[in-house]
Image (cartoon, each protein chain N blue to C red):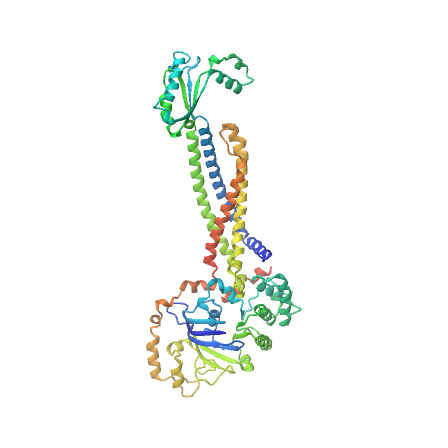
Length: 305
Length: 321
């Protein structure tokens, strides 16, 4: 209807309260950065859990000729020992906990070993006989892993039982705690942002009292009077959200992809700058919604019909 | 067109009502002068017509509609049919005369094409066709008021309320403004004009309604500013003194009946004084809970309402940059 008028009003309003608008933008940007960080950390946790679930969570390595564990005193695992592990996995006690398992023979182990260290000179020194037989288990419920590990650990012919989920548990814990911390900060900052939006709207209303008085007098509709203020708050919040997305991109690009991923392993750190495809719109929608909600409350207080 | 049906408005609990038991009707096409001292309820009457304030008791009808039944989202369309002019013009200082008139159209969504056609027409009607590009401070008071009238009339409202439109103007300029209002009235718009302008009222000889302390004390067709009627305060027949009125509230039929014809000394009979005092010493109890006086509304009112006196007075320099 009068898009140009409303746009003009928005920019006049933003310009008139430029200092307040800048603070709204900054506070929104910082709070939404924390929200985004929290969301990304949760995404990382979910990714990690799902890859761990996909892969076998518990691996049982039987003794190889080079094993030094006490249970491997008798040298490489014998066929009888391998059979007993196999039987235990199939048996009534453990089978309810185990979704599936696969067995990796010495030959297969050698192939994987050679692939992993392809090009290294020492690879040719090893034969299949040097490799351990291993069982790769996927559990019905990851929480049971400790019991399964305990069951096999220390058996004759069993060198080592590893529990990937257990190994990652501290890391997931750290991420979870950091998410809580980030979200706590985000909530605090968002409260500040909402109050700032309310104050900005109030100042903006005060700065345009005459226009508003005339508009009400000549019968401008409520929506028409309020729309510039609502959009003003939304524009500030959206700018904040865009800045937050930019900061997240820098964090993801330079810290996560540039340092964490190479250090901890590409397989472990799955989040990257590509995640912004969904994080950025989420932040923008969140920022706009909260600011409009805050503006509505504020306008109801300071702008009567 | 406008009808007040036993309307009372009390802003603050326990205070004297701004308008009390108002029963009056303005018909279509009428030109009415509202006279009376400041604080006699003229502005409150106008605010109730605009649904700026709701009556504490009673009903206001505008164009056949009971205002208490008009939902708040329909108030804007009610106001589009009412023009309003103020003593202090209330033009937007940063907009030119043309833009001020345009603003009133733009904010109710009038298409640009119509605006381009209507605004020059209005400027011509008020005699400012060559001054559309001037800012308010580059115009004289009379010219500013003409712009304000153009803004109020550009939507062709059926009612025009004017709150002391000539109060800031010299007599000859005021005459021009009055002629303009007459012209608008002749085009079919009901004009209600609150004024202290003695010459204007005397010259026009239209309907005169005098208010004192929130009550109508005189409603005279073709009247002048002053009147021999005993209850008229502005004619000097009763002292204009709110303390006096507190003691002698205008239960006017008594006063008129007791009147013995001698102006100035106003010796209201002792009996009347006694009975009146008994009634007025307990004003707070007269106001019932269900009168629903929203004190917060009253406190907030100055901040947002177009009637607030200071609204257009301050920080003009800022807007003139």
